[in-house]
Image 1 (spheres, rainbow, N blue to C red):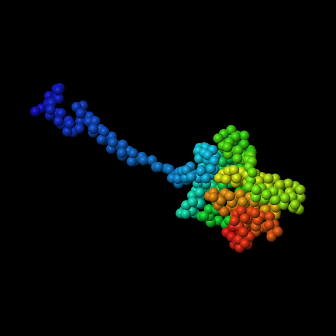
Image 2 (cartoon, one colour; image 1 turned 30 degrees about the vertical axis):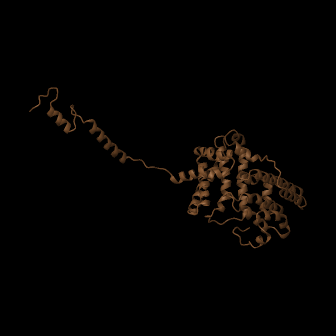
Image 3 (cartoon, rainbow, N blue to C red; image 1 turned 135 degrees about the vertical axis):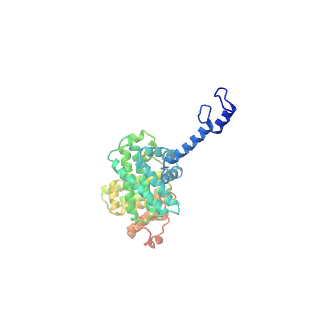
Length: 363
């Protein structure tokens, strides 16, 4: 039967149109349109799928820093919070600082993970080199905008310098311990200088608690043996044949060392106080140390006791022992009597020192 085209629509036409997926206006039904749309969308997405583009290595290192490494930089909650929260936010605005965080994170993993130590050490050094390149350039242009990033970067650089030679995967030729200490001291004193240069700016921001570490205003009664030994060290200094100006330099260095003993007694788990003595050294004392002068070396041996106290920190380990042992081998038998206390404190007897001429780090 033919259709006359008049409404209402006849049953034959209705069935035909439904079978071919057309509406009464000759258009696709809603179900057909939806299916076609989904197929087109799938093909379109597949043809223009963007690359993921994530640096998973950097993300993994940053996660390790934020959950583990930052908590090793201080046990005091206010300082740990700065390293965990404030510093990463600062690094987002200053990529060179981000490289510093990645470097210290990779180095920590190299210390703690038996597998991949060489690879992790290389990753750490690559990021550290990038940090240092930009860090040195920016030191000539310190501003309120970059001073916080530079200040925290200087801390990371110092810790890295201490930790890298101790890395199990380290394959380079190690320098003698006294020379390594001189290198670290130079970096630490650079951090101290930066703090003085930009201190007013830093003090106005969230890093102010880090800045206060450099003041070293602590007071505590040290154990009697430590007090007696430090007083005896000054007596030895006064009895030396050095000129008055040199003796005065040693006196101020011993006083600073006493403050360092006090600070590390109060805050034994804060690496900053362990490194602070190196940061505040008189450049003239550093020159005496480079010349391997007797009194300068004896004072350094006493600092080795402080370093030995931080041996549980991953970046310190055996530094204290190595420093005391190195000083021992630099001194003659008469001068060695002035450092017996330091030897005892780090667990190094006279016989052990004499038999360690082929130690891992030469003097």
